[in-house]
Image 1 (spheres, one colour):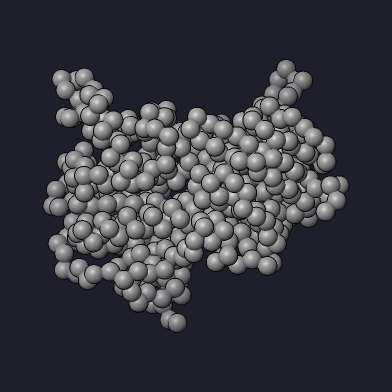
Image 2 (cartoon, rainbow, N blue to C red):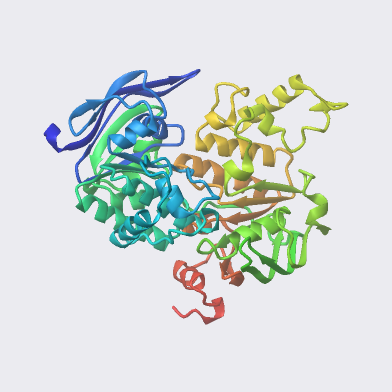
Length: 507
């Protein structure tokens, strides 16, 4: 391949952290006007490699070429000046600023007084061109998460990037939004720009990309033409063994006592929208109840009412017959795996050890008369790190240094260590690779089989059907009905997700 046809090339990139070889002599290339899929398990080194490209890390070894010319990138500003745009898995937006203020933030200006009107006009043209529509004057925190993703992409396009890196862009998108993103990517590449598409959703990778590069354990595994690839092949390259998400046999545990009971619950979201409407929900010991539905139909408020993070406007929520507000501080009642491990699951600047006892740090044996007992804390953490296979050089490192999959393992280890009666798992596999997804499923099945009641909220219909004993479908804050997990039909679920009650669906 002619170097003149390459928008980006990274040669022999190596990056070391204390105790970790994150990138080991990795080389990748992206052609002009093409989409390169970058695959690998959590912790494989994908994001580290892209953070090097974006100037957040400096490589210990290796070279970067843009349009055939070697460049040194020591900061995100230099990356932007070289035509690199990056949309991170966890957004870098200022929630309290408007869309347009976020888009132009950090850009140089010669004007003493900020004039937003020309910027708004340019942004509106980009919205029309790529069909990524947002209101320039809307405050970012008020936007649904999918719209925030559009803001990040538009921010990079506003700066006229030549290579756009999308790190897990569909992890927070609905199916229709994912289709919208795919159309936008097509428009971007049609202009000769290039895209690096990092995702764990193999179906989307095959649909969107031209080539796929796989890295595993920090090493380059190979690059294939997407037209010659399939999901089974890519999964095996990623994990090193065949991996599929399919329904597993399980013991029949019907007839368990009710653990979670919600009766006539009404709740409003932060924008004042009626998010749960006279909602009734019961989950028994020894069953996994999957909650399906397009994101934004009350799933977040459901999780927050169950976990005690939100007080319902009316109705009752009980765990083992006791009001949830009375038991949320007792880890033996509720284990809560939140949908956003960064915002509500971890304190990223605390160590792994500290995060593993953060809900009970004031209790014995971790504290005595207000003084933390660090030998006890370390021993507790060592046991959980081993039992849940958390990959970390030591429990003393900060949680933010771990890969997304290992951060999730820390949350799961903490929440399940006391064998709670109720396990609430909200999008526990979001942003995880196939191997990590399989591990999470195994953990939830193990909890179910020991007799816990499990609420499993997910936007991935395939895993809902693979894991659930019973499935409810949410639409506009209401339940459209309940289905048996063993015999559930994907078409019926899809129609219920669009607002049809189960009894009204005709195949």
